[in-house]
Length: 275
Image 1 (spheres, rainbow, N blue to C red):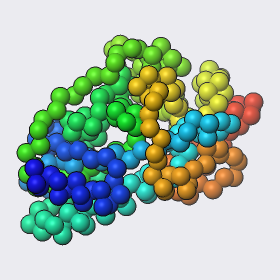
Image 2 (image 1 turned 180 degrees about the horizontal axis):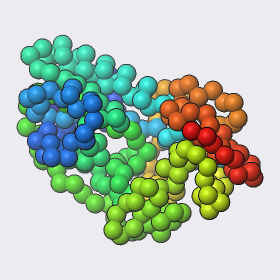
Image 3 (image 1 turned 45 degrees about the vertical axis):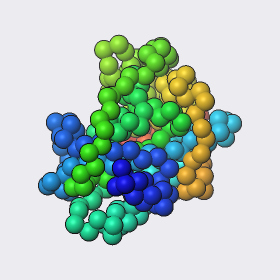
Image 4 (image 1 turned 45 degrees about the horizontal axis):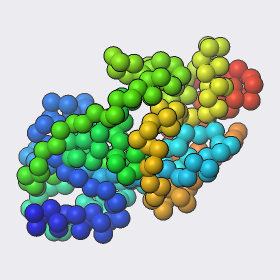
């Protein structure tokens, strides 16, 4: 218990608002095959899971054309800074142990890890839903050789109301699961020329990048506490226009052609995008 308190203090001093832990062993069969897997400590015992809230008040998005996660600075730049601060403190406090941090492009199945760490339930849209911040959180992990003997948590389902399934504009969500190839957010990220039907979906959504519909209709998000990190407040821009700077934004990795194609569609023109 004293060990856990020490780690909680380290996370708090690193500016991380939500933290939990789970054993590494139950995650091993679900590891994602990627290059970053090589960084997992050979004798990994524990996964320390952190959540980073990013949502603003609903009114702040009015008139915008970006999903909420894309309206703030790229979390791939922001979240690792918090995790590395924690890693530095952890290495100082536990010099005989190993600690490696991961964000998004991670071998750790982050939603499963967060659920096993007791940080929330899992919605039918596959997202973690935290009891305070809802699903409006980014997830980061620190894998360690430190043995915390964390109490196990079951992976809990959401309320099961089915509103996300009902309102999904593309039918990507169903009782059978998630068809990520149909996901509206994935559609806005797809390269090349879209069909008339696909373009119409983007036009109706009003979104140049991403989709928040399944989260907006979720009753478990209705009373989510709005307490974004300072960096997300400072970088908040809910609208993208032609020739907007891409640096530091979550959609920069896809290049300018895709985002400008979507803007053309939103403005009433089909708009092609070359690779």
